[in-house]
Length: 164
Image 1 (cartoon, rainbow, N blue to C red):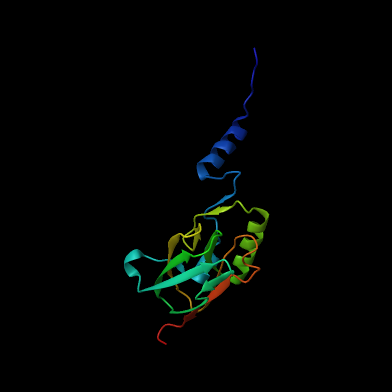
Image 2: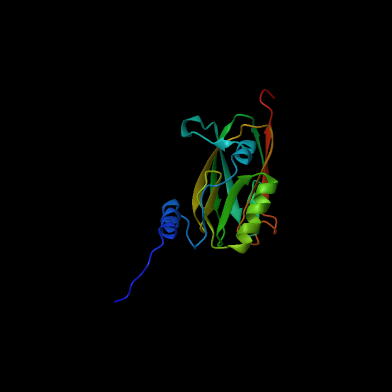
């Protein structure tokens, strides 16, 4: 007869990890700093979208357009299309946050995302990001797939102060 002793705290920890969706495959959902998210805006409400902006992602490591202008308070529906043969993504964030996230992606290339400020697309696919720009200034975006950001796959949204 084989006896197995289970340690209740260890089992509880494993169950907690399973319940939150943490996996060895590098799933990355949520967990971003709320202050950083407020610096770039917040997820938009579907009924409040004022404008649609189409963005293409290409294998020459570019976004078209890469320079976007919006107004503070505006909610934008980004329709993002991967016209290449490689997987690409569009991630909105501060330059500092994008760089930190990119470094994590370089160490864990299998990481997957499920946050409202980003969309990851297989070749030939189209997706959307619905975002409200609450602060005037600059919001960066980039493709954080390994090698893409350093190759220049980045852009910026210039957010004009409300009333201008």
